[in-house]
Amino acid sequence: MKEMIEVRQALYFIAVAEELHFGRAAERLSMSQPPLSQAIRQLERMLGANLLERSTRAVQLTEAGRWFLDECRALVDTSVRAAEAAHRASAGMVGTLRVGAVTSALSDLLPQIVRMFKESRPLVELHVREINTQDARDALLRREIDVAVIRQAASTRSLAATPLRRDRLALAMPLDHPFAASEGPVDLGAFRDDSWVWHQRYLSPEYHDEIALACRAAGFSPEPKHVANSIHSQLAMVEAGLGVTLAPESSIRRRPWAIAWRELAQPADMVELSLVSRANDTEPLVAHFMACAVAGGRDH
Image: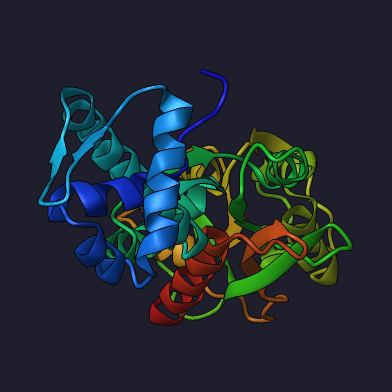
């Protein structure tokens, strides 16, 4: 059969089949009877089958009409579900959201954001990927992820960044370090000759540069002896006694690291966790995740 049954035709036939009266069916459909009768006749000609037995006293379904009625109901149900699905998707109630996050966000800010998001969007499939800052930017541009929580991000023509939390840098050191038992802020310059745990620049350029800038402001440029791929790894190396490092204060506080840490006597510039998405992204799921992220950032 070349022609497809339209939902409108199915609705017409359902009304007539359930009312078994053209007048009542027309009234139910808020239309006049002649166009309805004509539409059913056209439908029967298109199908090449008699769907109704008509007499002056009654209208009855034929065997073909009974089978056709079940399929018409299924067609209408499918149409309704399709419309509801489109509405839920456009409202950001269903779908898939792919999130990238740096390691420190996974153990700190992201859990709160995810809880808020899942409570309000339980039908959305959420995919979270651990990723460094630079790779997150590239993945956003390649549309491999939809949103990212990364370090030190600024808006560009292609990417929009929203600061979530600003953090002070603190000096982390092993428990057996000579300054571990000291009290109060420390002079960063006093650690110029220490073994330093460093963060690779290509992974998070702005974050790396903030650490380097803080050291230069203290009058030295450390020679990195140990290199980490994340803030978590930096602190783990300090815990292992390998050296000292600068790290965001919140990352140090969030778990019971077996390390000592001190505020800086000359505080460095604040480092940020930012939420980044593609510029001018109008996807409702992204917008809702951003709203949860901003709210979650205020709670920390």
